[in-house]
Length: 457
Image (cartoon, rainbow, N blue to C red):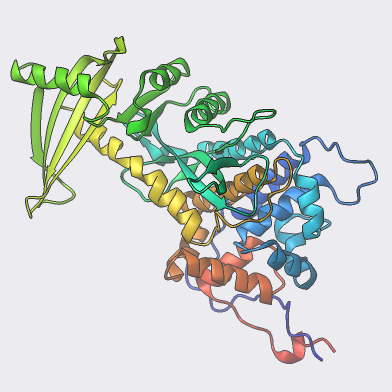
């Protein structure tokens, strides 16, 4: 039976510009190579007679998530049916089985995976691509929030949060606190290494989002000590302890604030407004001429009665549309508010939803399979897998921001899900030497060799 698979891709009558070279470091193959170099430095505490290098196992898991394989079984089938491209594209010398991958990754320290995130961020900085994400006087907006991504009554890990329902049923859940650099003027998000909300070693108590956020922001400042960051979060974060933590770590902030949660704050603002001490401003929304935006702002007001010494600046934005529907948004910030900057600060505050829609929603519903159980393990496996999944997402977003070839391939697909299908299809059907080859084939087409040339008897 002739084997028709794994034949080479050849260019055909390529249009002008198709032979343009990719950037030396901001391309998929260079990023894979640098991440593999980072993973080689992870200490391997396994027995000396292990046959598969730890970096090969990490890269195999990353390849599984980058190819958007829906299960370990599908990746294991790829190991047997399509090993050549795993070797050439991801630099994997020996491919582990699913059981080998689970056993090797479970005891690993997830903290080492912060290194490849920082590496990719540095590549964006060196290539002057991360600058595209700056907003408000050279700051980077970091949209952050927590989300649940796994829930089961039957399957669990020691890391799981445990909830007891009224009927006595135990529910095992996994949550994470995650964030991404965002910009109101483009749709790309650049994620950072997430913090899984989980039971700490030796603790019988559930972890909480506030503790995870504290660990998360400490890590971000360690990884990016000089980056000018404005943290954007929802109303649950606008409390005294969290604001003090942000200040301690050198972050600016724009945090949601609701009247029901900040009674004394809104009382003080309304009193100041009645006395004529609150500034007001309005304009037509330049992005939608049918909307009018009304602002009122007040600087140096106590956050609440519990923290009278913690002064913040208050901003409210009321949006009135053509149908006269009214939407109100309000924030507290440490940025001084003036008529000249309230439009941009309000626009920055409204990017808070980006982490939900363009990170969590994308990873749960658009191919990354966040929430699928790839393995619970007995130690750190869910953290390892979730972090590698986010790393795969970072690679894709980095290429969409800074690689013209990825952008060209992206325009040929109806949506990202179709792009992933095309990448998997080329990976499955052709023997290729690089991800660059696959992206060029998607973007510009290719020529199949004749059956006489490709059939292997």
